[in-house]
Image 1 (cartoon, one colour):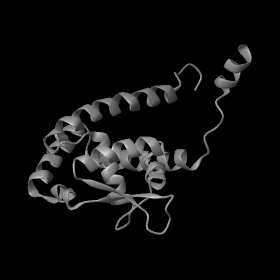
Image 2 (cartoon, one colour; image 1 turned 135 degrees about the vertical axis):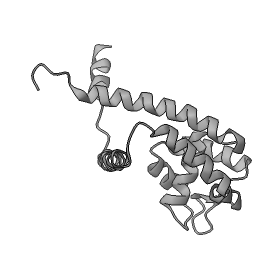
Image 3 (spheres, rainbow, N blue to C red; image 1 turned 120 degrees about the horizontal axis):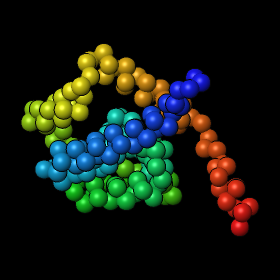
Image 4 (cartoon, rainbow, N blue to C red; image 1 turned 180 degrees about the vertical axis):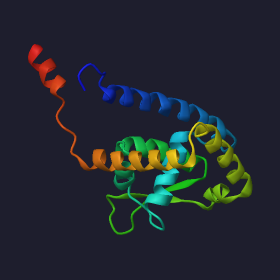
Length: 164
């Protein structure tokens, strides 16, 4: 790879820029439902990642890829909007569970499917079906690897601490 730029920082940065665009566009699409993209994602994690179940805040945070406190804050907004209930676990008083409400049925309506299809056509319009499938596969594989590895101690933090 001598002479060629390292593609990793380019891929890493581009992923964040794409995420920013998708977050903004998703917020526009979801605004009529009173939701943000982050709230929609938590609903999807709870519904799809724990089908038929009621994950704890800790389980949802691990699947969502953020802290328990962040998930709790997002869940509170969803509870206020009527999409989710935050409930005490009847078997473990220390655990708090998330349960979707019937309000999520809005995502099964023909109107929502049309809106979702228009969004995906816009978001992936420059890629053909095979490219989207390959992208999905690569992202899922990458996520599985990243999520499975323990977070290393940041080497820069050690350098900063010794410099003080």
